Amino acid sequence: MDITTAATGSESGSASHRPRNAGTKLLPDWFEDIAVNRSATERRASTLTTRRTVKKAYQAAWLVKAITCIDLTTLAGDDTAGRVRRLCAKARKPIRDDILEALGLSDANITTGAVCVYPTIVGHAVKALEGSGIPVASVATGFPTGLTPLPQRLAEIRYAVGEGAGEIDIVITREHVLTQNWAALYDEIAQMREACGEAHLKTILGTGDLNTLRNVYRASMVAMQAGADFIKTSTGKENVNATLPVGLVMARALRDYGELSGYTVGFKPAGGMKTAKDAMSWLFLMKEELGLPWLQPDLFRLGASSMLADIERQLEHYVTGRYAASSRHALA
Ligand SMILES: O=C[C@H](O)COP(=O)(O)O
Image (cartoon, rainbow, N blue to C red; front, top):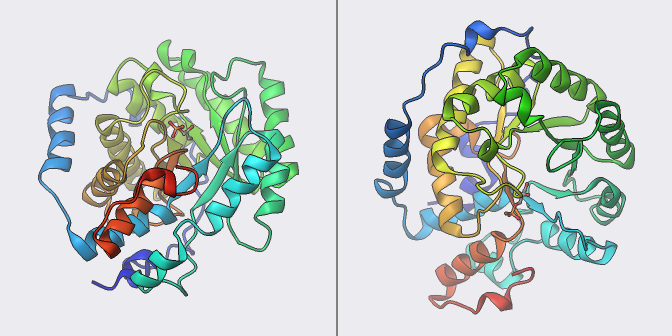
């Protein structure tokens, strides 16, 4: 197994010429009558993690791949410029030099997919990431609940874009889903997409608040019809965040939308993912449901504040045969 090829993605083809999702008009026919069988979905999700294992070099390659897809996140009330600078340093160099060298990846320029912060922190992150090519993602629109007036939510997007955010992680009004007000949901997301301009729009559905898998599918479809570049599970602040059954339903929506519209939309599970094993499960899900093209940072991100340390620890174990205390890894 060539870890460099797997990690840098040349084995699965370039995605750079893919057109951005332009959305469609609101087309309820595409989602209104959908039925989702919860127990079948849960069964399928559980087989994803039990049926498939990868070992040794393959596992190391997949873990490096996972790192390149991480949106390294800090969304805490006590975030400071100093903390964000440390986070950005880790995003630039997520794996220790000795481990990189042992993996043969010293020249591969492995970085995380992005850094994700609150709007007022964007400026610090942009400065700290200058010249790295790593995008800054900002949450916006009254994150995490979205319960502020729409003009303010749109202004927040424009502010974050003005500060230099290249990606905007918006939250939807969950009530629109719970009351099946698809037109209101579509309109707010379409306005958010417009406010983003060239910045990419990631639409957080807050799936732990949506009650049913059917609602998850329907909200995913409306978000894509309204022009989302990515659909994202959760804020990390709901009681239930990214789960594999929800991921399966969203992956099916991505596939269906692609077939019906011709556009390819990205996926970001986020919240509550802490271990290398979690990362592997999501990579399996993407590969099985959507195929290798989705295992690239322009179509797949893992939103996580504390998963990188365990991945680095597993990579250290792969190269040395020993486990280090997680406190030895920065931002553990
Ligand atoms: O978008 C990313 C999430 O907010 C991170 O959640 P987490 O802190 O549970 O990893």
